[in-house]
Structure formats: C-alpha cells, structure tokens
Length: 124
Image: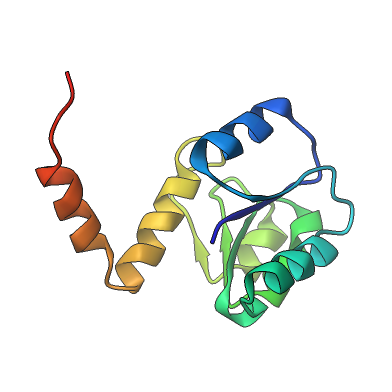
C-alpha cells in the first residue's frame, strides 16, 4: 500500500496519485499523525510495519511513529537525524523512487521486478 500525506494541497498530486492508483491521499494535513493513523486503520498495517518519507519538521511525528523513517537528501537536519536512511537524491528528484527501490531490495522483490521489466514486450 502507498499513501500520500502532505500539508500542502495540489491538483497535480491528486492527478498523479490517480494515475498511479494511490487510493490513500491526505492533502492539507496539519495533523500528519492522525492521517497516518487513518491510513493504518484503513489498510490494516501497523505503523511499525510502515515506512514514511519526510523533509521538514512537521514530518517528525510520523517519522517517529513508523518502522522505517526515511529522509530526502535535502531534508532539515533534524529530519535527517530522525531517519533510519537518507536518500542520495533530494526531494523532487527521484528520492521516492530511490526509497521504493531500497524497500523492494530489502524485501527480496527487486530482482524479480527488474527481470519482469527486462523481459516485458516493448511498445513502439
């Protein structure tokens, strides 16, 4: 399951989430912990089994609540210190993709996914 929890609201995020099939989108959140709790309740995933990414101070409560806190490279120093891992990419420049790859590798699912893409028929 993937969720987006953001203090900002953006039509672009709404559209992109729909394109990617992300059902759990919480924008304009001033209480990100409550949004995390709602996502966990809806999905049946305990926070300790979840990962979260952050870049600024309002993300700290969520990062402290999850089992795998991740910070982007250009995150506030306090956020980087709270993270178990920090991406090499800054926010908006492939950090989410990098984090997803890291998670899939840790789960032992990356090689199968890579093989699927390498053998997929090419459209053209």
